[in-house]
Length: 242
Image: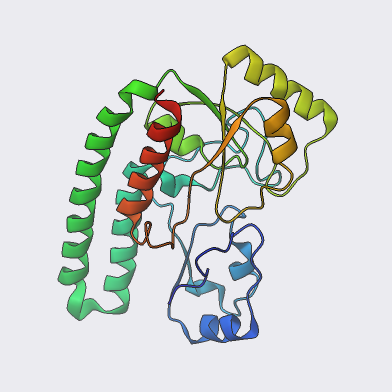
């Protein structure tokens, strides 16, 4: 069962009574952790059900770009956007499934291997495709793109929100404007799960085109992990490769 509905942001989602009943009925609950989806952790009676999927993953510090998205957290939680980390996540999930259902452990492991092989191939292909935009600076509304930018060698130079859902101060915006002018950024990327109302004036004042990156998926174009990665690479190519 998927807890977070398509189109919802984990930063603003609040579980319903029905969700909480589902938590209680579950044997395991997989979370990203690091304050991103603590609304699950805080709603579960038996914390032993919680499985954070970051085993064997090297986490970036939360202030990786000079400011913190999750001010009270040590690490940036958006680690799934690095395809290499998705491989670890799949094996972490398969291992837990095997613990719950040991009779079918071989099946879960085989599925993880198939997924991992496919994602590694996709990453290799997309890494080549991004060569033409690696020197093209861009800005995002939300600071969840450090893993993605690092793994694809992209120039993510700033974010509109100092922290998720936090309105930027005039001083912060002035610093961001200086960065945009210095780096020559021409595009700011929002997300389908976030409101862009506060971004329009800033984008207009700085001659920025507004485009979309999707970290979570759930639309007809992004129903699988592979489709999420491909969608975002294509969005970057379409808007930066000019």
